[in-house]
Image (cartoon, rainbow, N blue to C red; front, side, top):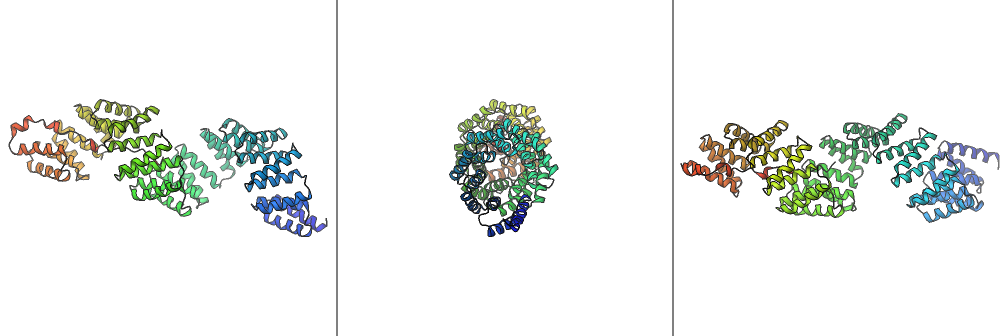
Length: 563
């Protein structure tokens, strides 16, 4: 070997050590032009090709090297590793088995075979190889990290974290070990420890976009939404065009009720990755929150074309079912909820939503079955309790309805849906003061609640508080000019206040809006009798019984599927 070749090998090795792979490759190419069978150059160039992802070229060099030196276990192990990168697992194992047969205590070969077994899902074989490698070298940090990954795959987080602790004792600033331990902590619900590892990484690498992304996702999971938004925004400042970060940033914006900003970020993400099913799903849900149901359906339909029957499919089918429900397309809504429940039969959210659809279709008993099932799983689910309570209302089972709303309000004393509906039930049961108490509480929290204003207007009318009733009904009709129930009740109040012409105008308008509403016809008959001087008839007719509460005005709550 002449001096020039030695100098080229020395330069190539130095560049390789400094990870200057292209410069190193130039040097070893020159060596092999001069000495085509130079084993050191072939081995080094083969390894460089591997690191550059040029696996076929790597195999060619390593194969030539093995022709010259058939018993070189390290080179054979390297070729086995390259075959693994090419997904040629049989060839990979042939090389690695031969290398280990030749040198049973070669830690590198054991580690490479362990990785191959891991990729094949043969975790016990993989663990066996890493265990042997670590018997040979207790401080083999790579073997510790790979073994940790297998333990994590097997959900054995305690052993996984132990291995990473050992790796970090060897090198406290090992970024990959800190990332892996942070993920293991997160998956084992040790969130604060996970956060501590991510914080440590950012102290070492303050401009790492990926770590800001990971911490942003973790903060989102911890419901630290503003911290999450700040981390994800920082990640995007460093790498503006990462569709995954844009997607998660959009989700965080949505949690902060910044729906329009969320939509902008999702549009950016889809411009970069148009067929990403997760992003399509999230944009579909965002459109839904903005009441843009047709746009939502377009995204959800596209996402569902490629989603397999997994958790995301359930979410997308559920979201599409909600869209169809909002559009009044109940049969299509039901089809989607049924499809979701074929994948996850006990999904509480979907059962709740299907129960709502059965109720809207008038199938009250079937609806109750859907509510009963999730309540066996979680008896304190306020969404399901509210909807079952509404269902009981429709069946005039007031005591059972009241029980459900009471349970909700024990859990969440300010729950508006339960307060409005309990106020309604108290009214049905003649417990007017309790009804007013609930409705007043709703209006303290949400002064423009149409349901609460309408029902309080009805209660005040029943109690003879006509001016108070008129004030509430006027407020409803400022916002909902075509609310036939409010018009009919105000017609009665006007009669009580001897404002007969205004009463007639309201009743006639109510009948124009809902000509088939029997309750309004009853009230209309009463008013006409009164205006026709049929006082005796009017006094014998129980007006208050005709003025039943309007159960159709009660809102149906959908749980927020974007969470």
